[in-house]
Length: 264
Image (tube, rainbow, N blue to C red; front, top):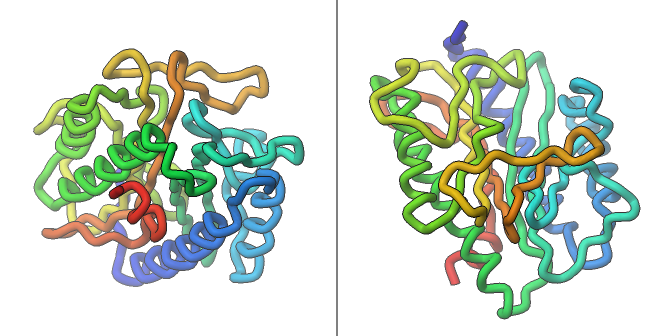
């Protein structure tokens, strides 16, 4: 069932999204060469607790950490580790979720570790994924269909010879982290559930430079890390969007300096 949110519920969702966005930004600033992904995870858990929240990922279906830290061709669900030290040229996707005041927030971003000008290829994949998120958001208007979001993202990504992941999708969000409707990053315009005012959606392109326009990932032996076979680079951005006549972004995983970096 698709749940429409009241003004009071939207206010809490907005506050949670803004707080989580600030934490995600802090994590991007901490993500430097030599830093272990587990260190980022511990900081995220502490910062969430400081604002009166709790991690929604930790313990979810047995997931062991507060955030997901996926490197390079890993698309999503990479598990933080003390042994995984970031190095210059790594592409790091950070996915983070929180429960606070009875409502969830869920955001993701991708950052390039180090600032060498030689990483043009990585920047380009990140740029297209970030642009696809903005294009998807533009379709989140009352009266549209979920398929309008999905189709717009797929067409844009495929037009640059990149692939969208089929195994995982965006979703509604509210009292539960994953609510209806599902929001795939591929599909047909004019199809799917009708978008209505009061819906809150997590729109999250998951993109890789894989060998086909629709990409099925492989899950590694840890049972979580999702790898794009044949890919060098993957990127994941996520925003929480309120559906109205014009979409309203409650929180988004796009920041400076990433915006300047991918625009080069």
